Image (cartoon, rainbow, N blue to C red; front, top):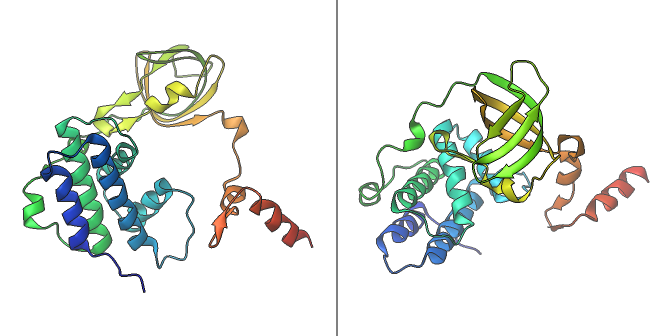
Length: 242
């Protein structure tokens, strides 16, 4: 029978990331990612739910355990960083390990060990007061994609006609830089929960091509206990129509 991993083992892995200087960036990310996967497995093993990816697992556990929004942002940021082999600044690495330890602590309902607590930041920069949301919804069309952000045109009241959507918002730990490879001129975007200041729009969530969204229930039906594949939707559909 598979042995359940303990909180002590996971905290040891987290400390190993910071205490082992000879680790390469790729190895650090791999250890962080594997530790997060093990922690999520422990958290959802009795939930009865099927999840499509690590993002949805982390989101479900943060919500069900009532993890503070600023810590949830930090944990999801850590998850993204763990999928990259790029070196992180020391400050960001410690922030990520702090977020990982908070997640482990919440999953196992235990305190972070003193020796681990001593090497992580006590206060996260993600706990800074977020900017005021002064516009809930903006529909826009991309005009150009530049290094400073995504330039968009808007035909909507209470919003500038031309605006820039920056990739990063450090204060809330938001990183939309992945959009640079996905959007192009005439791409449609929905910007949700925005802070508008002049012609600068800082969205909390960006929906890419909103008119072509898939039904989440359709996607979820492709994930079963015995595996996942797009053709499983066709099998499910056949069973319901027979």
